[in-house]
Each structure stands twice: as C-alpha cells, then as structure tokens.
Image (tube, rainbow, N blue to C red):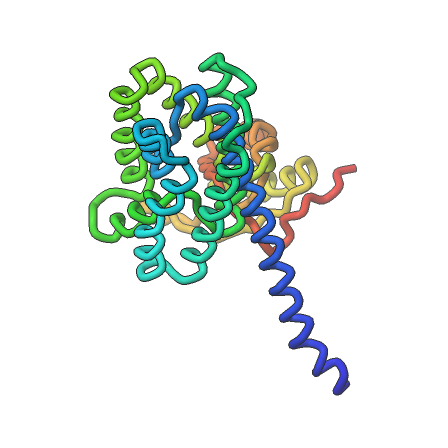
Length: 295
C-alpha cells in the first residue's frame, strides 16, 4: 500500500508530461502544415490568409523581408495581451505554435510551388491551412493574434468573438486587392472560406455530435424507439407548458450528425406534431454516449 501511495503522484506527473509532449507535437505538426499551405500554395500565387498571417504576407511582398520574421514579431504584442487577460497556458501554447510556424516558413522558403493555377492554390492551400490551424486550436493553442484581440474586445464591445474576427478579416482580405489585385483578393476570400470550414471539421471531427430535445405526448414510445432503433440512450425530464401549465415529458438525447435523418424519421413516424430541437455540440464526455449494438 505504501508503494501504491508513492506511485500515484509520480504516475500523475508522468501522465501530465506525456500529455504536454502530445500537445506540443500536434501543435508543431499543425504549424508545419500551415507553413506548407503558405509557402507551397498561397504565397507564391499571391493569395493571403486572414489575420496577422495575411498582413505578414502583404508586408513580405512589399519589403522582401522573410515571412517568418513578420509572423513571429507581429504576433508578440498580442501574445503579451493574451498572457495578461486570457491566461498563461493559452498564451504560452500560442507562442509555441507561432514560433513553430515561423521556423517552418524558413525551412520551406525555397520550396517551389506545386501549382501556378490560382484556383487550385486557393482550394488546396485553404484545405491545408484549415487542417493545420484546426490541429493547433484542438490542442490548446492559436495561430493568430487577432483572435486574442477578438476575445478581449468581446468583453468591452457589444459584438461576439466571431463577429470581431470576421470584421478584422474582411478588412485585411479587402486590403489584398490594393496590394495583389482584386482577382487575388477574391481568391484569398475563397481560400479563407475553405479554411474556415475545414477548421470546424478538424476541431469537431467527422462524428460531430448533436443534442436533441423532444417534447411529445408519446415520449415513452419515442424514447423506446430511439433506444432500440438508434442504439442511443435517452434521458427523460419533467417540464410544464408555459401557456397551459400542463405537465410535459421531455426527451434529451445526444447523437452524431449521421444519425440526424434517422432521428427525424423516428419522431415523425411516431408523433408528427412533436416539438424537436437539434443543436450542435462541440464536445461530449462521460455518461453513456457510446453507441450500443442494435440487433
């Protein structure tokens, strides 16, 4: 027993260290993938990303100073701001990811572009950009200081983080028209849109989860059908109608997006008048979310 008591703290410390190594590895890998997107696809074709990365690409074009310097030094003031306002862990993780990105762009600086077709560069560059940025975000970091500005600004302005980021990026992407021409600015918007969608896919995964709320007079029948035909567990909650005060039984369930159509089919078949609300969930942990086998 004494041996086990001595082992537990060490085991916990080892687990934390392994988790840190794992996070650093995937953030570095994500940063390298972003560098490939920039140096092999986007920059040679004069296509930019949003945020500090986009500003850095335009400044490199205007001054001929290597991209890596701008990526690192332009992000530093925002990292200091993030350290003071958001937290030490997030700021240090972002610093590591930005440093890895900067170093990777130096390594890839002389690698030739694989295509000089702007549309292909925008599509494939956008996909790789989304994969790399998504990996960094998924493991606790960030690739761009404008996100920190948006988080801080959200506390003082009547706008969401997403709205602030969108405003800043529209301004930056629009500026590309004056530097690279409007055709390239439009290609930059295509690359940004693709990257934005791929980031969501990487963060949430292909098995994106959805929460389902169902209010029906046939709650028991619907719940039994969900269990037997979808293999998902359900939770019954008690509620009351706001107008009538009549007691209502509410079904709560978590499914994947691939099961959404089947869920709608089950509910529509058993109670076409049932109220059903479906929402995206970014993370599911604990409980009995694992799907049961259906025989």
